[in-house]
Length: 460
Image 1: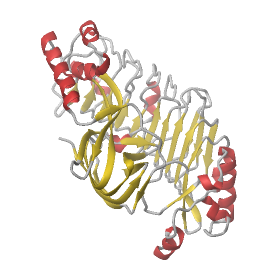
Image 2 (image 1 turned 90 degrees about the vertical axis):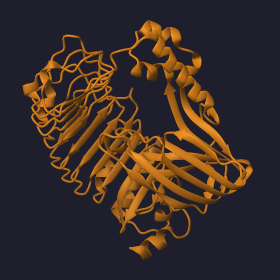
Image 3 (image 1 turned 135 degrees about the vertical axis):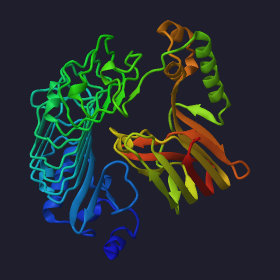
Image 4 (image 1 turned 45 degrees about the vertical axis):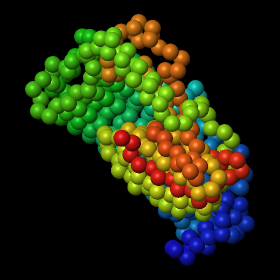
């Protein structure tokens, strides 16, 4: 395998052009299927990168070839997906953009399907006879139609995400082994369809506009229930006997001020609530402290990056990740680069955009950039709402919060700091997530930068 990788990737970047020229061997049926999908997506062969096996994460359209077969494929704006059924060695399929339907069946090795759709466009998803399928993630696209979703004979499926898909109810499907279900940011009103998931252990129902959970069925295996952001009525009741193993309940941003009485006395039971005590003075003190923290932080806030397409020369280094199901992920990295031109991403790893870091929060990081020659800017993702954050700590009424808001209290963009040989740059925030890649961004200033070192560590 090593010699194969050397021949495939040892001479610079490869694209699907190399397959068509014969430089990279590929099974004939796989090649024809990929060409049909490229034509459907209006992509040239030169636009489809060949990803290294066990190599760094890819951005944009890519294909992975192992022993002459396609095992992973990522495409944007495919209008016809039927050719994908010919890729019988496929294990990882990712589609982004707007497309009308995805039908897959009989692929023995397919383990992961990701769909990032356009929320306003109808989408149908039909997955059948896929014995190895473990995870399906759909984010965006309207699955609300009667024929929007089919899951049949997928015995290995454990994780299912249907986020921001226009669902008003839980569609019927044949996936009894699902243990982790995310159906946040839909329009759910009827929860009775959840009864089909008797193995369910983690259920995310956030931001669905639910006023009650009266239709929640008996779920004997459920351990964690997330109702964050639903405007639950004060008389909403929980049936403890229907959730005999529940030990974690998230009621943040629901208006609830106390744990449900139904679970009183249950050993080990944990509930997350908004803080119930707040006074105007303490709220304003917190708000001023948050504003001061942003003013005193190094660098400047910018709403968007410049033009990409830059390059990092002779890079080396790696990242170590620690992710948990319910705790914030931690990442530590150290990279060196011989040179930088333009604006270029540094890839720290990959994740599922719909359910980042196995359910844990996006990592808070501190990034430090040093340069030996020239100067370079470091961009760290920064998003905040001072009023919303202060309200999460001090429960204050809407009128007081709105009156205290200033234009600078809300921001979504990047913190930009500049490193020179005499003055390293440091910034705290979060990495960017782009099509499943976890990224930081570096930009050469005044013509370029040489001998760079980037260190990433957990913040705080």
